[in-house]
Image (tube, rainbow, N blue to C red; front, side, top):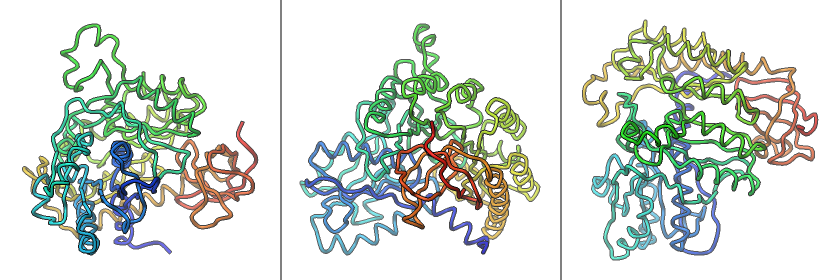
Length: 484
């Protein structure tokens, strides 16, 4: 039965509030971690685990045996922050039973709230921003003296390029590789530039080395991560905004995102490559040609648009208008035939009219995205929108428009998945189906989930699957043999 609008909204919002718990290993001091929000946060949690492992900590998936609990937080929406505060409330009993237990808050919410966390959440002992994870051992030592500890200083250089992440909580098949940090775009609704700082990129050789190492460890797919991967720019280090001050030699030998895609694709030809997240105003055609040129780069692009109205896009400071976005979609379809595209969409941004909302729906009808992440607008402190714009759309209107956006996307998702029925697709197996031990699940190059009978196949296998039927979110089929 189709979910009503409120249920759909909660379903989509929960994707950003859901915690990822790192699985436990080892027998040292016990670290329990939960990561909320984006893929970048999960990747950062693996970096934190690596840093603390060298300090004698081993991860556990049991709260009761933890010596240190860390929550890696998200600030992108009010709901995500409230989820963390609710979780902290649940730790009160643990703290009473074990007064030596230390609780820390990491990530974007820590950077935004800073020292105020200690007043607002009395049981929090540690507050650390995204650029200060190397300082964790020092901060923990400071806490041993009975003091609370904080470091939320943003960096112009930090990329954690030399830290090999501890791969925890994953499936052993797919892994994240961070390539950039921060964002310069300053969308009026977004808190990321204030919590993660300015854009800086990681040395490409360290990225390639990490990808090669992952391949040697048996991983089959990597996702290159950044707040804005299309802005990747390596000219020897430093902020992207300072590139024009670099020497002529540095500028002439700089590595851009399309260059990096070619380099990684050639370095690990047997591995699938994905990337996230792109921004339309920064995606150049050379990136599209790089995707088309390499079979191992997946034919899927997550391309947030946020609104179909040029007027609202200008209010959001998105750097592109409706017509430019559509032109980019057209070029993607031409250069990468069959490429799958997904989106982010916000309903109820300040001053949004019914006409603006209708333009969003019509843009969705034009593109017919595979899937999307859809939310109603929530004001974030310190953003331009919070400081300069009145949040003037009633909540019930935001929710109604969101329900219409989600309903439209469900129709398009069903059309997209139905188009694969009867085709045989290459599927990278990621694990057992959550619904049946007798089935496996994996994803196609288009990022579509496929479920099929397990037989003798296992995670990491590339399997040819004949698609027999489809739901709006999943393809169901039968294996035809290993992919060549």
